[in-house]
Length: 329
Image (tube, rainbow, N blue to C red; front, side):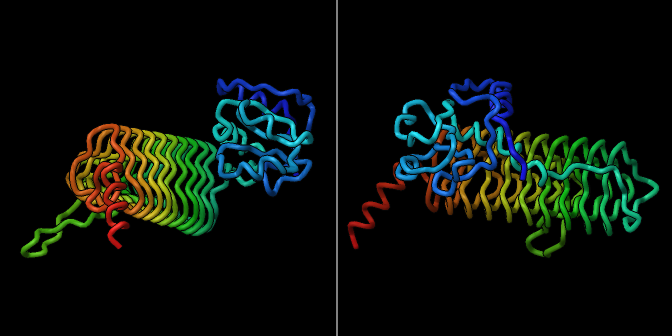
């Protein structure tokens, strides 16, 4: 069991410009991070959602990441670690307790993999059994590629990328520090054809995934017809998301499971989209937009809007309609 000293926690938070206040000794040791209700006297916990206020008062945790205004409600046995944003603090230190589960390249290429002589592999790359590396591929330093994956043709994977098992990537550029979960399909031909004859349109474009992005299991990202289907930096895309050809998604996107994007829609920066939302094609969605779960977006959305419903509209109007409809019943 891995044990973490408080000084390690403090150093990470302060190195990320988070102010930390606590009377805990630097040598104090924690076994795990757990929820308030499940933590033991040797664990660290956190409080970031007032729904769990009752759990806060009776937690058995040794210490808790918490805002100063709530610290007085902790039991005497639980020491507060005062931070402005406990959830961000949790995110920053979570790997300390779980880094044994992180995939780090061991530099070994399995004898059971198939590597094209027309591909290029840089230093310290791990490729597991039954993975195929096709022609015109370049794999950067410290890349991990799991089993049963098919990479290429026409793929560039930059440094420190992690690709899990059963992944298919073709016609794509994956920037550094990305994580591609199991079952992802990137760079296949999109859903395009001439309507009357149903003649398929050949796709010659590619997919670009920005740095530090995470693509969830069984997500599909289609290559563009001519140019690039593009995902920005620091994107967090959940499982079972469909991104059609020519879609452009900006930086810092948060996209929950089962969202679908039709072709040629442009999504701005800092967009949040709830599960099972659908976005029609050839739209422009602005920066800082929030789209509620199960919304159907059929029109452009300007910057800084929150929308819900089908067809999606300003969330205040949607709530009023929901109330009116409920009163009629």
